[in-house]
Image (cartoon, rainbow, N blue to C red; front, top):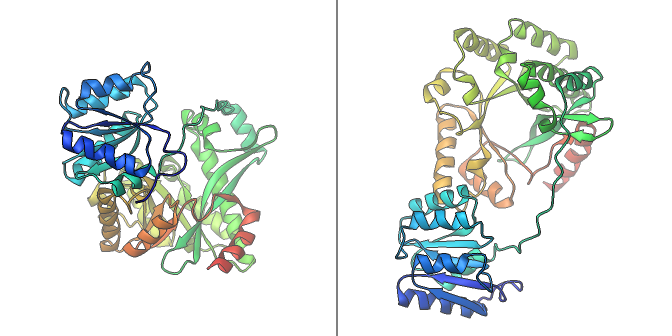
Length: 403
């Protein structure tokens, strides 16, 4: 019989199950796993009383049946959230997997710490699989608010060329080859060190001048692209672009001049725009997208799946790539509904003859799952964090040795 990890046997478990036979079976399963403190209750009101702050010893993990008497299951979850308890939940039920997955989403939306859901019947192996994910609570660490800057201060930083692109590698899943880099804007502040967009993007957006940052990142990214090519690294670059920047009348002329200035072919640059940001633009904007594709630039829909998913738009505009949002990637290998959505996104990309890129790949399991589904590219922390340009050639050499 498998046992719980060393830090779990001394935890206080609550088993809330209406059926006495199943309640006893759950308690026995916990005891077999090594749990030493198990409290049993038959209905929702008693479960809530044991989860209140004054109950001693406090409950660490609660196993709750959705069909508990005395209260609707959804009401019970809402009530638990209102308690503000630090308890970790395992929810059980006789519902189909799709319904239990929706319950997971609901519990997490309430801000309750969920270890997972289990479709009945519950056994020791299923319990252990979820309890293995338990991590002891840590005292909350006060995170100081990052510095904020006025529009004028950000403008001075841009004028002083303190902003620079960091690059995150994009990997071809079939071969493991590094085929591209995505640009992430960073501010190398003389006093505060390297700052991410949270420190400066609001000031630019509120003043309608994200284009200042966009053009800075375009110029520097293309310049670095040329530098990588000169080092024998024929890498492509992709970068996020505000639709308002692309809508500027001189955009096509200016980007063509930038590419010519640095001697980089348009094939090596892809512009990424979020799905929701492009839906309200007019025919002139669509014409510009088509013109860019005809010139050889790549166009990618970023955060695919989080917007209104206008399939007609996807079919009519010549996007070369769909970037699938991390919310559909993380955990897709373990959660069937997420996996189904991910397969649908990849199938759509394939049927439209578009490449697909999964964002937020954080584990080897994510990588293997995506590879098995035929996803084209992947990027995420499992591969590499965004890095400064000077660090990329060395990282690439290490990656090639790894593969």
